[in-house]
Length: 262
Image (cartoon, rainbow, N blue to C red; front, side, top):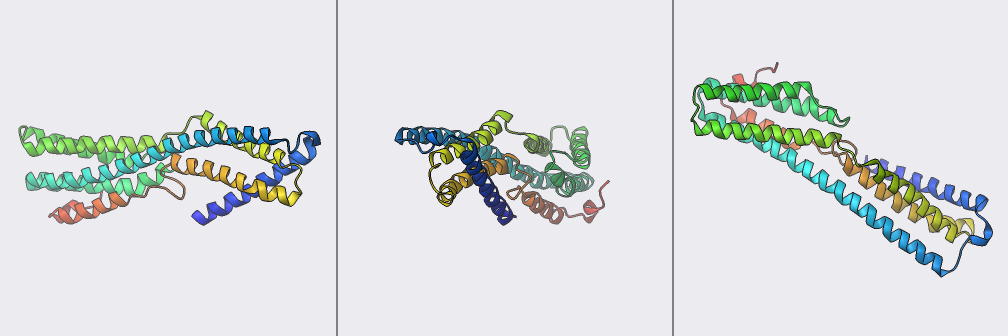
């Protein structure tokens, strides 16, 4: 998948380079091509300004990606921790909670995770969350002052909060103004570089402009890859939740907890 995106960036860079050369050779007057060194200073200033802006946007997108990955891990840890606390309750309550935890993990892995690539959530996972909350909350009628109940409620709250954060991250997008700046600004920067090299032979222009186009496309690609944490070649996988499901399934002593989910 990464190789495919690399080839796509290369092809896109070649097309942008050829397009810039075509525009400069046909529509830009000869007397403004390849101007003096002060034009190169302006180009350098524009390049630094563009790099700073892209660096800021990339840092913002990468921070959100890492935070989402951390939330997914915390969600899985809350699931495992809740299965351990559940052993402090009676057999029926313990196995009911274990069953709800298994159903929740299955719904998240099999149904919700693929949907998040399109910014959607799973009704199955939502229903599993509601059943889990009701099961744990119902224990308050039999052991209202139990420390295990307090810990379980905290774990359920953490599970709900981290799931909400994960779902929010699947729908968050960068402001359109950022994309406008990166795409239009990058193309204008590439076009400006082509004008400065406008008196070179076509091959010389191509060799000079192609690296600029590739760097610009790579920057935009990186921002796009980290902006959507659940799609693309760098998509976050449900590996932490899968490990928690395996842990919960093996830890709950009653095999009835592993029965089919609603």
